[in-house]
Image 1 (cartoon, rainbow, N blue to C red):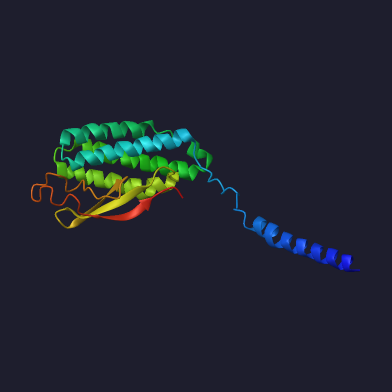
Image 2 (image 1 turned 135 degrees about the horizontal axis):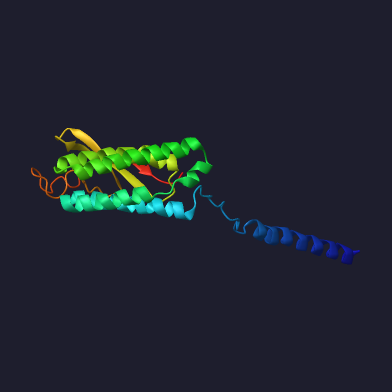
Length: 204
């Protein structure tokens, strides 16, 4: 009888240890489930062409920072070539409305870039740069469902006549103002970092 009681107690003890230690260990194992993979809407080649276009735009912006009209026109010519090379055919698979919207904004951006190339005064060039920026964001980036690296829409509150604001796109949070530049006739480089971030452009 005593042996039966001892065996029963021993079994209960072992069972208790199992649930306390083994089950507890199982419950505290880290969750190894993989996070859901974000599916892209576009092909790699399309996204690469958009990234090339953005890089070309950023080169134009940097030329404005340096106030160099010859380099501005050279970089704008490169930007126009990148824009014209953009193959939008796969957007037609989504809907004809998206394809037509992006095609129209592409034409508007190109028209402003070509206008910039006709200008001789850097202020007028900057106005065309501001106009093409405003077509690129939000309309163009939203319509193509941008999937590239994070970009920032930045704003200068006194880009023209010290009273008119203007936007530009940057791949860096730091403000380096293409409307004031490094050689402003009044401020020199004193207003180079004037401005703020208005929005973030990123994959949705």
